[in-house]
Length: 78
Image 1 (cartoon, rainbow, N blue to C red):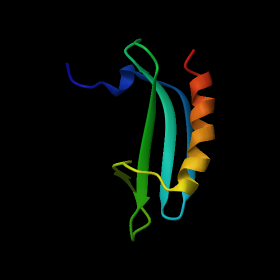
Image 2: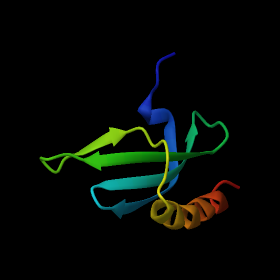
Image 3: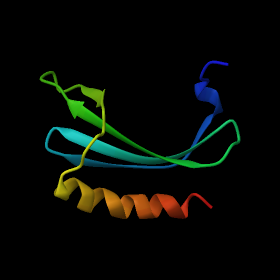
Image 4: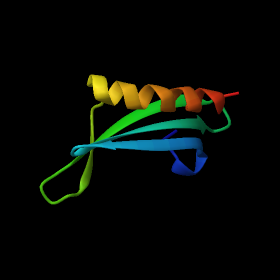
């Protein structure tokens, strides 16, 4: 069965922007299953368009901003 966006329910999402990149923290439940925490990164290209990128590693500044958002997201997972 292919992925169906209509079955993916978002219950929390917050984004933190940095210099040329942004990180989103979200809580999603697919097809009524358990809620899961999702982290994603987008980088801004020369045309100032946001493009999905592998999250990989965080700088100290990014981690300091994102960890509190992750804690808020955990509250939405009950």
